[in-house]
Amino acid sequence: MPTHPLRDITIIGGGPTGLFALFYAGMRGASAQIVDALPELGGQLTALYPEKYIFDVAGYPKVLAKDLVKALTEQASQFHQEAGLPVHLTQRVVGLEEEDGHYVLVTETDRFPTKSVVIAAGIGAFSPRKLPQAFAAEWYGRGVHALVSNPEGFRDRDVLIIGGGDSAFDWCAQLRDRAKSVTLIHRSDRFRAHAATVNEVQAAAALGDGRVNIFTFHELDAIHGDTTIAGVSIKDVKAKTSREIACDVILPMLGYVSDLGTLLDWGLNIEKDEILVTTQMETGRPGIYAAGDITTYSGKLKLIATGFGEAAIAVNQAVHHVYPEKKVNPGHSSNLAIFGQKDD
Image (cartoon, rainbow, N blue to C red; front, side, top):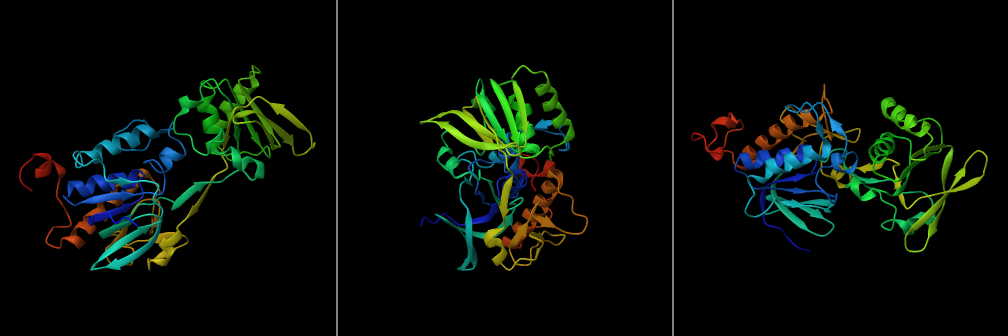
């Protein structure tokens, strides 16, 4: 099992809070890295709604989720230009060990020695819920896509979206001007999505031009094709009748399964599957801090803006833990020598 170089800080999670923590660690002159179970940086922003606007991030009147991830990545990259961004993706953490006075994060394939840890894992390690039909399993990667990272990949395609929540309706709205057709099916006529998006999609379906279709009380009944999807059958769960529809792409938007996994065994202060932290973002175990949606405390707000502040606190505490001679408060960034300003 490969063992990576010892770092001052290892950040678990590559979402917005984790990316800002990576930047802040570099600003404090600490060596740092991100370890994330997902295949791309951005956490929920990339996995769930890359094309959706965010309106409550300071400094942006509005910003696409994917563009915020890009900006955060560029911000962190300024301290890692020669070696490349220290990010390790598709690395699910399965254990934590202590060795020679420091920690070792253990993933399914690698070992990451570190002097401190900042947990910025959002809702924990999460994965998309898969289609329950056994026949669908073989089509993943051959027309069934659990995640959407590039909407342009569905241009001029016949897309079937399964689900009734925000992700299902958001992607309906985003793809309807790109795809040849978009069909949404749901097992009931009660939706969990934002009313404005539901109304937008329903209005598009009401045009009757075949570009957008909604079938309530329907489920996937069969997938047709050899090596690629040539069409599907959907079943009316009330009438018990089936119909065939044009389809060459299936997007199951059935929600996500989140799991704190091994974090539950680390001796942290856990409260209702969240990490209870102090005002210093301490978790109950020395040298391990947490920030972002995975944390809880009195008055907690689960906002990206809140996560940024918590990341700064957690990193400053981690730097002081690793280097006691360094102040917890770094002062104003406009005065830091690392940015070419006066000596800090």
